[in-house]
Structure formats: C-alpha cells, structure tokens
Image (cartoon, rainbow, N blue to C red):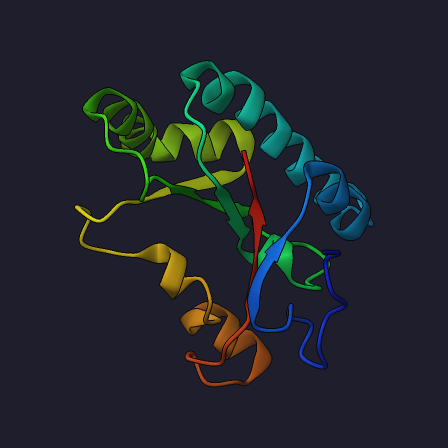
Length: 151
C-alpha cells in the first residue's frame, strides 16, 4: 500500500498506512529541513533502535507527517503490544527515559505503546492534537492518518 496524498488540510487521510523507510523518504523529504529530520530518524534507527533487536512495528507521526514546510521533529511510537518478554520491553522503555537526549541528537520524539502503559499514544496520534489544531484552525480531535513500518 502506498502512502496516500494529503487531504485538503495537509494531513494524511485517517487510517494506518503501511510503508517502507524509502517511501517515507520519497514522500516527505522535499526540503533541507525535512531531509535533516529524516536523516536524524535514520540515525536514531541505526544507532538506538536496531541494536536492541526488538522486532515490532514503528508508527511514524508528528509535524513531519503533514505538509508543514518546516516541521519541528518526527514522532515515533514503538509498538510493544505483542512483546511479552520483560527484557526487550525494558530496553525499549529505556529509550523513553532518554527522550530529551534523543530529541536533541536526532530530532526524534520517541514514545512506547504497551498494554501496561497508561497512555496509548498510538490512538492519540491519530488525531491532530492541540498544537496542529491551532495551526490548522481545526478541532483537536480531527482524525488523521499515521504511518507504520513493519519489522
């Protein structure tokens, strides 16, 4: 399935859109700022995520996944819902405790999704939220799409 075109608000249509890292690059890297964020995402995946060897889907979102010319960063939700062993969950959650460091180094805001965690940001990121709502003059619960990279 290909990444769909933006809707009239500059958002992905509602839904979960499976894609590859290369498809993200070809769809979202149309200026230097976006290329920098994408490169940071690649460095994050290579330096922080791949060494953990946790095979789980990654959801990609944030202002990077809009038609915003100069996004702030890219948001990632690590989908740990099917991971049952304690060790990989602990490793993945450790990234969350380094959130500020990771954001500074890679322009990546990392979150985790697991049944034992109280906030399900996967669901949250399927709405535009307060910041984007103010920018786009829409309700904060306006639905939008999110990207998913499968392991």
